[in-house]
Each structure stands twice: as structure tokens, then as C-alpha cells.
Image (cartoon, rainbow, N blue to C red; front, top):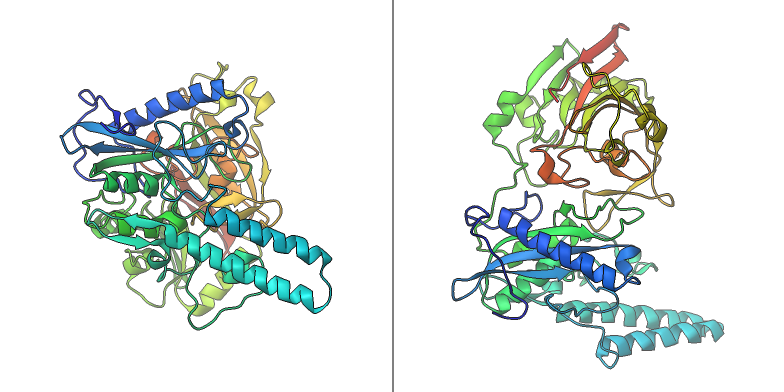
Length: 499
């Protein structure tokens, strides 16, 4: 075997994968999980031998790709994103698609020339300043385009395309102004620039090596090792999907022609329709129990949504739930009702209660005294994690990994959630009520998972927690309370979860 193809014993790991892993939402196949466990063990040994490693400060995403070799043997490849401790090259890990780190290479030499312009700017005066700024901008843009043109990505059909070509029809993740941090200058022949770091994530590196060496990909997995970032929600040893913004266009091309698993979050129209039910209805509005897996409104994918189920173009959802979240959605039957109900949400005159089950919290892992009938907490867990409280962590979207959100104290929008623990169960999971005071995307999911929040991801959260622990996101919109905007009567709509 090639030195980068590691042997993998799979005789006791279940059946061979029938289709390749859907990279953006998956449960790791037992073969990929076994390979990942070997890498986790070796990375921890590497950390012990290298106490100054960056893994202790910021951590890194690692990945495995289980492959079949031309002689029919089963093995696996391993990779890390970008560099590890200042190097693209570590024994036993696949090399980068492009190595721009060589000091005598074009990238570093041109980077040095751009840095020299920065020094000249400090001493320049008058018209020289504008000229140097334009030169720096042009060189920076040209260098970025040159670098992305060097990423000659292969696919299963033997084709090769560079990243500029792969991304040319993609909607830009950031504007040119945002990307370069300078004034926007867009011409008619402007071509979108791939997001920074494209081609350096684990799965593209792994597939590139596999296709170059005639290895058949069978399944994959990505997981985090090392310290958790301050803003993103990554925990050591947990599996995560491939990123959307940087990887989806690349993997869509690289995996063309390879039979792939269905997205497990996508359910059939018939199944979703059968689970959807009306909870309340009058002449002005209705409340619907939306099942997990159903979009509230149509997305770019064109998947079946709650609007399709309603079969009435005049009916409008007043608010939205994530596709993975189940529970109450309020529907206005006409435009006047929509405006009045929207005003209730904008004024925060609607009380919303969600029910969720959280993964086992580190504070609750130790023994605790509880009422054996209800399992309600009665002991020292209260001293570390209050039974009720408020989480205030501002949120912003991750521009390179939609739809993920991150805690951002500099640019984030205010996000406030009240919580109340109802039960800590025998397995250590926590049944909790959430009362969101604001309505940010993924607010409850991030506030639950973040170390400065409850430090306990919602069970089954494929973005912020461990997707292996539950078949769905255990989050449910269970109750709405408000004053009817037409009759002035108090309304309570109650739909408890079965968690």
C-alpha cells in the first residue's frame, strides 16, 4: 500500500457501505468511525509529544476517507485542514492539493513584494499614496486568482477543473469589497472569487489524493481535535459535516457520478404531510404543528415546504422554524392578519416556549441526588449550573459555512434566551424549557451548545453537537401565548413534545 493508505480492519464493523457518505449531513459509517478513532488516538499522542502544538490553543478539523485499493484491499486516508503547526506535511497524512508555503515559490515571493508596498505606503505622500494603494490592490487580487488557478481539482470521472472555474457560477459568499477589505471595483467581466481557504479542507484533499492514486472512495467523516474555538462551536472528538460555502461547490463537482446517500434530513412529501396537523384555526389564522424535516417556506433547493402543504397562496407563515425543529408555526390567512400578527412578534408580545433535550452536561456527569419519581435535580448541580437563568450571547452568521451561526461580540446581533431545567434524566440528558426573547437564526441551538451558554448541545444537533446521539434534533416549539389581535382574547396554543 501507499504510505498514506492505512490498513483498516473491518471484519467486525458491519457491512460495506452501499453508497458514499452525503458529506453535509451524515451519521458516520462504522468503517469511517473506526478509522477516525485511530486518528484521534494518534493525534492525542502527537499532542503529548508536542506540548507547544497549536492544537492546545485553537484546535483543528481532521478527516478520514475509507477507500478500496486497486487490489481490493480496504484502507483509509487521513487529512487535516490547511496547515498543522506551520506545515502542510506530516507523516501519514495526505499532502495538500497545492503547497504555497515554499519560501522560494511564486506565492511567497509575490506576497513579500506586496508587503514591501505596505512599507512604502508608510513613507509615501500625496498622489503616491493612491498609486501604491491601487498597485497593492491589483497585485493582491491577481495573487489570489493565481493561487486558486493552481488548485486543479480532479473528480471521479477523470476530469480536472481549477477552483476559479468551479466557483464561476456560484453566488459570491462575500462581496469583493468585503473580501479585500477595500473599495469595491467590479467590472463587467468580474468573476467570483472562491472563499479564502477553499481547497484546503479535509474532504477535498482526501478525494484529490484518492483520485490521483486510483482509490475508490467508500465513506468519509470529519471531526474536531484540540481546543474549541472562541466563536465557533467545535468540540474534541465530535463529528461534523463538510462546510457548505467552501466545500459544497467543490464536492458537488468532485463526487459527480458517485452514488451517494440521501440527505437524512430530507423526508418524503407524503411522510411530512402525514405528520403535519392543525392545532388551532379561526377566520384570521391557524396554528400548525410542523414536523422536523419540513421547511417552513421554500428554500433554494425547491424542497417541499409548509406552504406546499397549505395549498393556499393567501396563507402566510408569520414566523419560521428551522427545518430540523418541530412544533407550532402561526399562519395568517390574509395580509391584514399577517401584519397584525407580525407586529405582535416585533413588539415581543408573544411568549414562546420550546422544549428540548440536551446532551449530558459535564457538570451533571458526576453523581447527584434526585427525586426518584421525577428525576428533578435536588443537589449540588444547582451550584454549578442554575436551574433557571438567562443566556445573552450575540450571534452572527458564519460567512464561510452557512447556515452555521457563531458567537460574535464585535459584530453579532443581540440574542437573549431564558431557560428552565425541568428534568435531569437517568442517562444524564437534560429536559429543558427555552423562552427566546429574540429570534435569531439557530439562537437556541448555539446558546445551548456554547461553553458560555449551557455548554450542552441539543441532542441530535448535526451542526453544533454530536449527530450520532439522536436520529433528529430534539427541539420543539411547544407553546405560544398572546392576545388575539382581532378579538382581544388571550390565546394559548399548546403542543407538547414527546421527548
